[in-house]
Image (cartoon, rainbow, N blue to C red):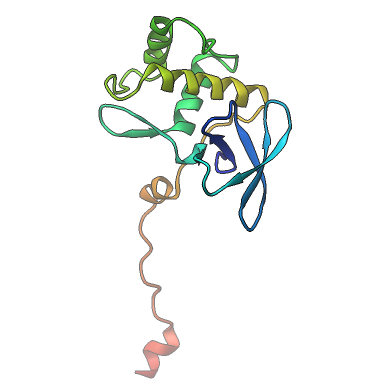
Length: 155
């Protein structure tokens, strides 16, 4: 799932897809209604790729949380973000049991459920691929190429 072109913009509801870069910023399109608008450097915005959820051990990338939600809800819409805070907390704990209860607020949970439902509706939730570091960890390190026989003979 590539979240590097999906943004959240402070003060604006929903999610936005980056469609062009300009001298002064970006042009984005709302995933909710398709309206296009400019985003300037002064706007507080983030790509979903840059967002992580606090857990007791470390931070978990949002794409991994969204995939866990997708598995939990079996590809169906998640809990309504306007649900009772108690329901949101218990549903979030079912998805991510080790989330940091002191640093993840109900408002954060509401955003995650909202984003999940929007991305699901747009068929943008896919299994996250391994990062390059994780993929490299499973491979043996490359060793120096053996010298060419000609080089060895010419010594």
